[in-house]
Length: 188
Image 1 (cartoon, rainbow, N blue to C red):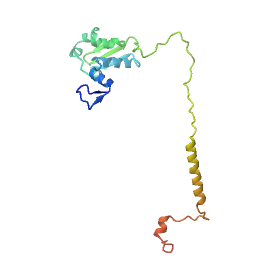
Image 2 (image 1 turned 60 degrees about the vertical axis):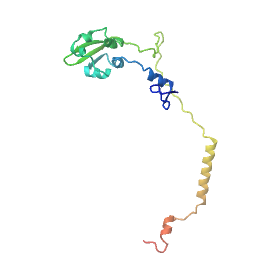
Image 3 (image 1 turned 30 degrees about the horizontal axis):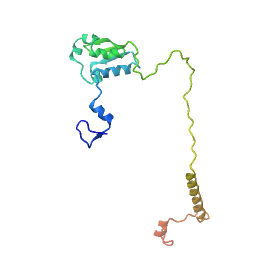
Image 4 (image 1 turned 135 degrees about the horizontal axis):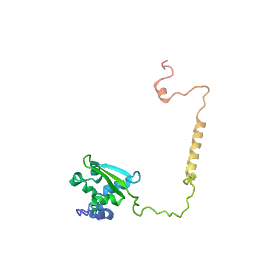
């Protein structure tokens, strides 16, 4: 734990990872949001039509004025903006400045990082195998719990046996009724 790195306040303590993130935050490019969006959409479709307003929302900033005025900005393949969609395997197919939209088409599938394992083509495909089913384990009750339950049952049996038995459908009066009314004065 270290004191607050921005103010040096010892009352606020941070773990070293949190302090590292505050001191050196990860730099994010302006068009990284567009990269993530196109990488996500690549799983579903090969054509994406985006309005300029939607692109502003995706990149969390405004497009430059040249993007609204001339098509050369969109056709330029050397710019930072074009690198965003080219890196994830998309190309700009059409742009309409009057209606304010751009259409991207997927050119190739791009693997994302080293998170996914490469499957070898030599493996023989197996027939369908169902997902493994784990049989739930039946737990034995502890001896203590069993003894407590057994004692409770015995107490209930004793209480039931000690209660007086009445013939017929006679039910004893509740305690509050006994206190309120005397047997001779009970209203009908």
